[in-house]
Length: 368
Image (cartoon, rainbow, N blue to C red; front, side):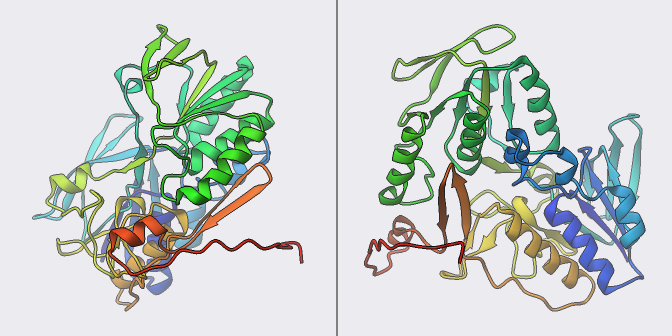
């Protein structure tokens, strides 16, 4: 059996490792168009801010390690450009040499992840001081730009990455402005929780602009000035886009893989798609709510690892199934720690559930 995995971060490498633990007989190949594999996305803001000293700490594994440890062939800077599932054959392009080759497979796994959303008007041209925070190359690029000693940062979006980058840039001495389209930070959470986060951020010196968006950009090669829809002018030295992610489903859609309501790939509890011998895991695929039993999209590293292990097991004859996720997430903003799990009040109301909402205040002693 020949297993080909497209994507080599959390989910893709988990598929390969679990499949190899189950059998020594399969040939396992992983392709990724990036330079780095099996890295910690969650740690990137902290490396940019200096809490993680070396970038290598986020990339403890490379292709040579996977070959030696698991006998898995990992090809970085290789892009799968076409899939002919009827003949179980795909086309791969070497992004360094430009050479193309055809590769046959028995089982195909999509672990293509998700890409940051670039909101307008930033999607109209490239600027040398606009960055996203999604992979190790982004960390390298921001680190190199930091040599110019920017003083003022503009962050677009107030989700996990936006808030973590806010904290880290404040620690580095930058003035930080956040522009958020919604009327609260962390939109998935309930407003009666997030207002506490907003108060804390403002107390730490963050300029927080809610219910607004960038309308106009001034500058040729760099963003020199932006004007928001509400007429606020901001003059940043560096811009971080953190306006959410979109699953990388283009290749899968071309070959007939069905998408779910979230526009991520629809899978069953064994990570199987609608096509035989085609699986999808990680940020490109939907998961299941353990509470409602319905598909949900939760692009989190812990979920990606679980999905990868399940797919690797099922492909090699195992019987693991995805039991669902609670959607647990935790982040830190300065000295405030925030976590959520399960359904929020507004999510529960959408499900037409009978509910009562309570706020409980108590002291905690995490160090004990």
